Length: 74
View (cartoon, rainbow, N blue to C red):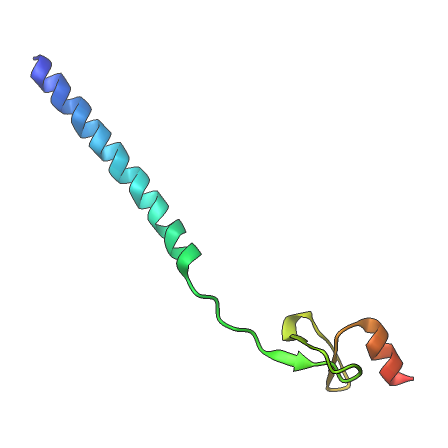
């Protein structure tokens, strides 16, 4: 009877370890994934290069800040 209990405990430990390993595997894959490079654009006023997502687009041109956009307009 004690052998059966020991086998059940070992099986439960192995199951829990396997289950926790499967949870950690997708997290590690996300951390190791390579992010795609983002397009860079040039500010029409000062010439600094910045990511497209951080730029301000006006009149078909990209600017690094609202001040440079306004300075180019007037």
